[in-house]
Image 1 (cartoon, one colour):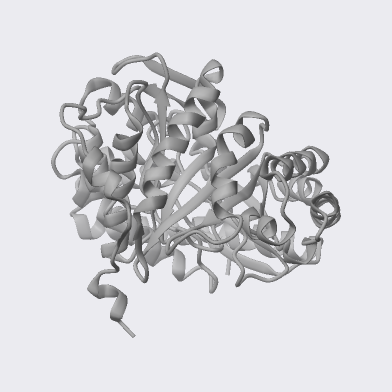
Image 2: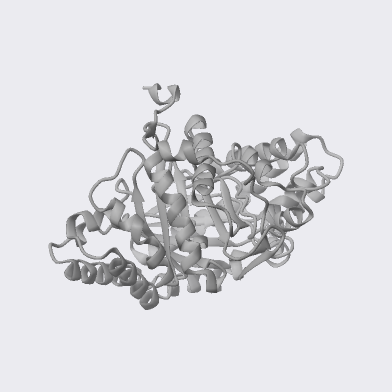
Length: 452
């Protein structure tokens, strides 16, 4: 039974500790929109998205107002567009502009799914979509793109890894006049999941229903505030506090998701219980780690603290909802986290340490600005390293890096809003991985792939 103290505690979490629903994301299948005429396919896509998601923003705002729970973003994810192109043909950028039209009509913050799944090789439509990504992200504002280049079951498609290094570099160059913003809307995955509500990596998997509502919760500030009340507890006590806090956060997500599902008349999918930070003070995953006893995020011990945090969040969340999914854990996007920004500026948080941290967190190397001189093969090598961590550990990993064209280590990029700002981090450019990347081919799946 809920008592008055529970109510006051939740109100305080929202008003003082930055607790929010980070996103409600409607996933929409576009498989029935294929047509031999690409223009007709695009019209079908627009009509289906606007029909199903036409009330998404209004419903989100109604729930915000009635329950007093902030819902920061309303988003849409769709079937990977490369699959539609394979059947319908046409210029991929035409599909991206159709998604933008639908985003404008529905009023959502982002629409994800300009995507391709190439972990075992390229099928029809995949390469055309990938090569169009720089133009597509330059000529749209709310469309997000993702490419899955590896998995535990299939290994790593190094042809795709090489290509994505080039695509990221080209995307940065074509949007250099806008702080290279295109790269902030592009993520490269290993072991991508089908029900992720968070951007830029959200797409609607082929195993999902025709239409579904997913919810992504957040609340780093709530966890940090809870830990402040236990300044001298041991790590077991801290884990218990995090679990109990994650339970409360996830219950709120379950409530919002169920209510949105009922009002929109579509099935409720999952709650993604990730701790997603923002640049706002008091809403930082890095500050949670520092509250646990680290002088600064990035010092020795950071990976262990993050591993404990991630595990405790999952353990608390799964008790609060029968349908936990997505990525679920703790995100470490550098430019989107006030504590990470400070640690990177001071030189305490390095790219190599971030890579180690990705072995135990929700995703991977996220929202990291790198020097504009970084060549494509080095970007590809960063992707390959991160994909290897995901492949061997049977977890989702990702790379979202922004080559800051014309800028050097120590200078800054500033995107504003949730995407934040941050320093350009040092990348090891003294020796080249070019010969390794140019070999291409496929890194075979590891022994873990034979679990069946």
